[in-house]
Length: 74
View (cartoon, rainbow, N blue to C red):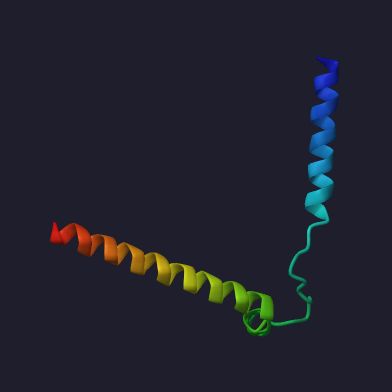
């Protein structure tokens, strides 16, 4: 029982340390909210994620539309 508690505690500590060191968006304290939004919107990584998400959503919508049409024709 004691060993299980030690393992659980070690895992919890490790998860905490990894969570605190994870990369975050760095926000400057003197920066206005509007400027932060513009800066994050123009970020190349965010642009790429938005493009991928839009492409995935368009593909899913097209697939669903084809399936619906096929079901209606039956």
